[in-house]
Image (cartoon, rainbow, N blue to C red):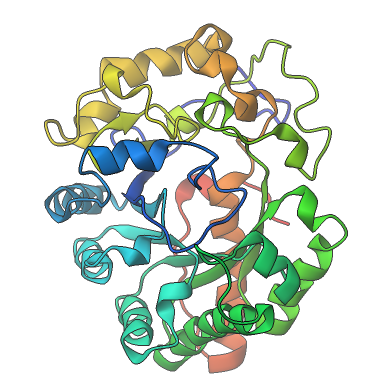
Length: 374
């Protein structure tokens, strides 16, 4: 085993010995937004075209149900994301309700646009919170109308003013917080912002807006990713100019991804990690339609990659040797989703106590216990 500077021991996270802590699901590839930094947006890659040509634009309900049942037995997280807006999936609400009924924990990544303003969309949001979905992450990337209109425009361009477009989405976040309060749900409500050049000088104000004025549980500031040879996105758009300054040096610290997460696309294909958004490593793994996720997770391919990383030989592996995110330290053992859960859980517990007088248990994975917050 290799030890990190913080003396923590690398290896499978607590609870991930038999099954991943998180299953990352590419729910859908079409999107109603045209975000310039999105790796799937037209001009940045041809990934959407790939799935469109193969009839794989949406995740099959039958496969979802099988994965949800298996994940539920382990109390694992299902992360609903992908190349498009998950709530455009016509069965997404029912799928999440089913997963929760089976014991899975659900983290929904969404642009929030499908939660309002119409009554049907608002009702879907209410149903998710009634089902006690564990976390809703609103991808906002801004703290004001002008930045939001530039960074998260609707596909095809603005029809309304930038202010109307912004207020509509902010109202959806506020509605989620209100529904949560009404039913005393323990759903974490968080916002994410990508650390990109367009937010220079605005980032701190945006974080303050969401925390202090809106009252979300956490603001995730994600490092800017280029996704390597999967896209045509240039490194220069990153806010942190030093981030990719030394990518030639060998990397000894293991990447955390193969030790905690497994990625599945709409075709049931498995990818080694979330950096491989084109699923180039899918040919190395069985398909989720043919094997259980626990069999794949404990199989020889994942086992080999983990061993190589633990031996300090990750740079010899494909596609790890060309991974800018790993070499730049974006895939960090002490940060990421577990830290988000710990921070947001502590805030939610405080809110429930102060606003509702309720002393509730907020689930946080055992693997997050040793991670320092704030």
